[in-house]
Length: 281
Image 1 (cartoon, rainbow, N blue to C red):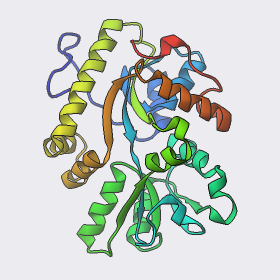
Image 2 (image 1 turned 45 degrees about the vertical axis):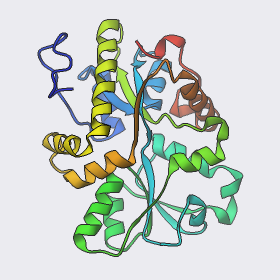
Image 3 (image 1 turned 90 degrees about the vertical axis):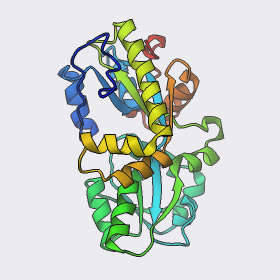
């Protein structure tokens, strides 16, 4: 969107800014230092339910969490029974989704993996590369980054086992889709309907181009985020279910997820469903 001048009708200064973790994103949003942001789908709901009139414009990412293993016998999440699983996130949506999944009866007792929390994805990757870990759950593009680094080092094979979305679909058939991340409008711009509609349209066009042109998109990503190797980004794009849809069109899927989280982890969404005006411009 920056390089194509997608919003030139509305601004002569469109800036891409990378946030490092959800806590930093919350601060940037509160200080009104950013107008629109990619975010996990629960964050705008939480902010809206706390009285901040943000809006969720779309959901673009549906499958982004991957189980990666060095064990060829691990072919699905159920095969982790009694095995250690590295988990590099706490409190945020990936952790909430994993905890909700593991709360099912199918993972009770000795059928559950042994979770080992790490401070960051980089820590989890380091443990995997040095043989101190065999199984890890990572958000893309870090799953692809791990596999790329392992190949560069000539390590024993790593296997992209299963996405959490696939496992989720089997255990929550009534909530088969996982609307994991999208674009939100901060409260200082959420009232500008024309601008929000333009952002939603431009993002959908850019996401479709990226999915259809994985290599050029990966090269563009590296220009803005130099520490990500092009092959790893290309692999992440190919592995991710990237399908940008307006929030109002996927409101049923969002409300199903929010309702489930409100029961299992109410602090993740503010304990209730957002109001109707939350979904899209």
